[in-house]
Image (cartoon, rainbow over all chains, first blue to last red; front, top):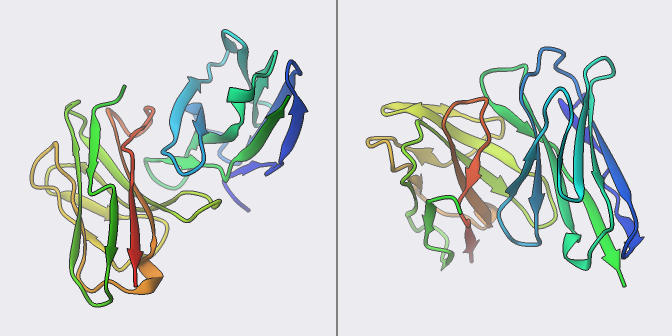
Length: 110
Length: 112
């Protein structure tokens, strides 16, 4: 079983829609959670950290559910520019490092 | 913007050549990483370092080697490039192992 699992998508949504992605993780002792965004043929860029109490950054909201071991990303009022692959990142149970999920593809269409 | 740099950005080279991919960061981070990523596929960790003179192999077996003689510099070397090494190589750094990683722009390698 992979340490981090994401629905690969693609999620095809119209502009202005609200879309949510979930990501499950296997390490119950994980303390670090992040969402990254990766555009086609570019490097991943940090979108936001995920805190226990949940956090919001503009149109983006991240939440953590420790009991069920998943994190979520909610995007409101989707823009064309939100089209990208969203990577879920959690610290590994095998050694002192982060594990990147395979990513969820989002396509926002006009 | 993160201050992490990779050169070259693109490299096309023939089979059997020795190549070194450069990665430098000016953030004073102790932790540095190399990932390999094929188009449309997930990131695979191939090497990491927790400080000067510390290097470890990652989750994906790689024929490349790395060195960490200076905090800011983490080069990756392929002694004899093969077409199977064609991929994008991404370098990253972080303050601590559990902190967010910052990525360089990547080197897109093509071995003919």
